[in-house]
Length: 196
Image (cartoon, rainbow, N blue to C red; front, side, top):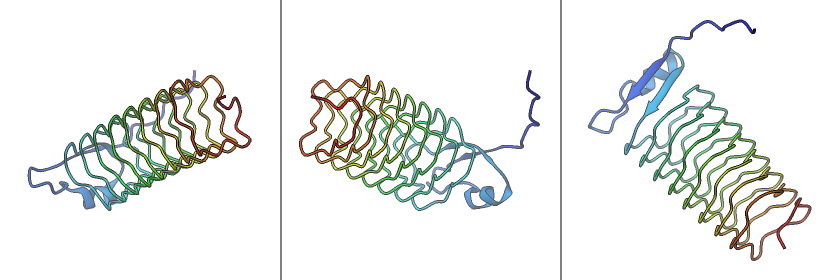
């Protein structure tokens, strides 16, 4: 049995009706954030890099250009949100929900995204380079011209997704469901279990 780690004081953020994040700037300086609850609010251009915020809720929120690099966002929801050019490099996004979200030009490089849901999402020109996307769901998503070089897509559901012009060089597609997926113009060089 492994020893139990000491509890870390946590701060839960909420957004006031004015749309201004309550105590957001002070929170970054005072310690770790337990969860971010910003449904329908604007947190664009913020820096949450390295924060531990599992279970955060950004449904319908704007998070354009926000930095979540190396953040722990397990089990968080970005449902219907908009985060163009947001950064998630090396972030823990296990079981996150990006259902219907718009994250064009976002960077998910080296992120852990197992069981992530991108159903109907738009992530055109996004980068998922070397990301762990095992069992992720991209059903009906638009990931045209996105970079999946070296990504692990084993067992992912890519049904009906738009991968036109995407870079899947050296990606692992073994066991992925590619029924009705549009790979026209995609780079599949070196990809494992490439669709026929």
